[in-house]
Image 1 (cartoon, rainbow, N blue to C red):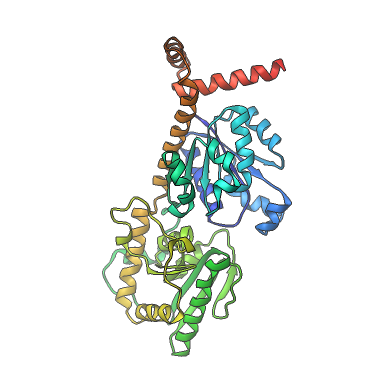
Image 2 (image 1 turned 180 degrees about the vertical axis):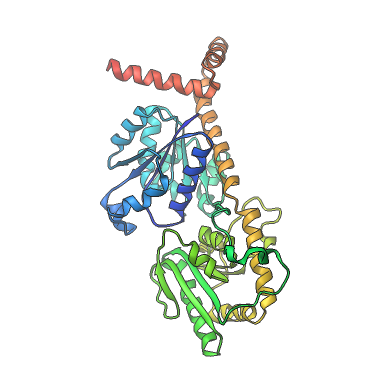
Length: 406
């Protein structure tokens, strides 16, 4: 397996950053990557994307071949032309298109579930067709696990800690034991992209900051990203920023969840879990001996209600203890290094790709006679290919021959 098609839409969120990183890492490992992006007015309006944003959101792909398409027939033609051997769909809006490619060209389909949806109600054929399924957390996989547990894998988002790291100006002090002396103010950042009930934590944090400022606490606060449906008065707001590292290094304490909080912690912020619910300071004990590094505050995880007074009390405890906040910032960086590793995420994703190829091969090979299987092994060796890859080649060649005859 060498040629992979990544299928997505354009969106300003951690999902897009996830795809940028995945493409970069797969190319570095020698895979031939193509990216197919579904563009239509419905998708763009939903995610507030203008056509002028296309260049900005595709620039991180560098020289990767990109298809902008509007109909599934275009995607099928492109996949056949590029000899795609596996398609990996990241958006539910593209699931029907990826399903069509997989069915018509007989290539393995991998899905990543980035959100929580009634998957079997809305996309039953695609879920059934998928050779393997990745979910970024247990909540995203919950609905399909009872039926498809054998082909469903929970792989948490990984981040590039070489890119997201503390301010270089801290130098060796980052590794020293001396106390951190905060400047005139404590820098607080909320970072992410939320909507609906998951935004209620932002308003609770806003109220908590107001309570503390009224008591004489010197707190600077930035809101970086999008918190749809919330109203705040205590933050300096910046909207969604393609490269937020400058803001993340500015902060001392970061609130949020998911990939955004991982990136903030990697930059040396004390991480505090906040969204629909409030989880408090992120602790290393949450991840010790755990199979999945969940860092989410969506409703499905049933965290306590984000109460402004509780949030204010916890933040005041940090404000009043320079040594504590310095130690927690260093611990946050270590948690990011040990548990949020991009390379571990990509390694596991590549393993899933190989499992998808094998699963697709098994659907065909179990019908072969012993003589045919021996021939398959012989020809695969002759072409210097794995048996799985050679069988996929045979299927595609047969499809192409049938199409030509038609």
